[in-house]
Image (cartoon, rainbow, N blue to C red; front, side, top):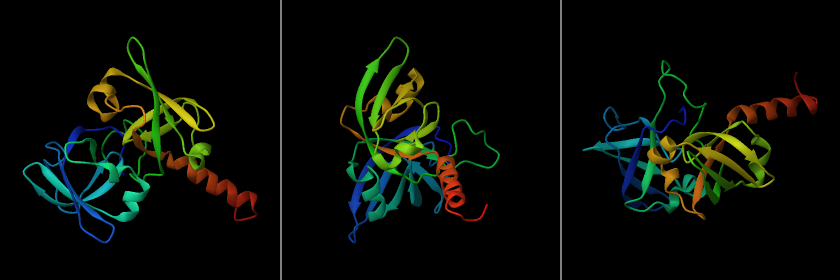
Length: 203
């Protein structure tokens, strides 16, 4: 489990095709590797990956074909910056919201609107996810916990403060870039519970 508060911007060192519709990704992240061990979880652009090895501030992780298909990780190339976050400890502050690291879909940056002290980014929203996104609700974009400022039938907008623009990859995203999206898991649980009740399941 994560909080959507990015700890550092890492860098992709290499992407190795391991065959069988999978890849081995090596990422440099001095902070997140400072206490990382084999089997630990690190979120890379919002995708929970398991550490296979750590060597001189670089960790490697296996990425399955399912993950490559359902996220934007398949587009990563050496030199690309990535948002990194270690799994949350039970005694840590929940600065963002509960993030599983399970990407629900891939969106696309539609526009950027600079303002005096912040910037508004608008993203394409896959139709299957639109019912989970509400104004003032939470959403995770490339691993960053954000508050929805506005929402339409196939888009949503967020406002980014200077710190977020500087410390995450969202400050560098260009129009047309794909992004990983994870909606608030609580919305999905509520839908399931209400669906069971309305369909005559257990109350």
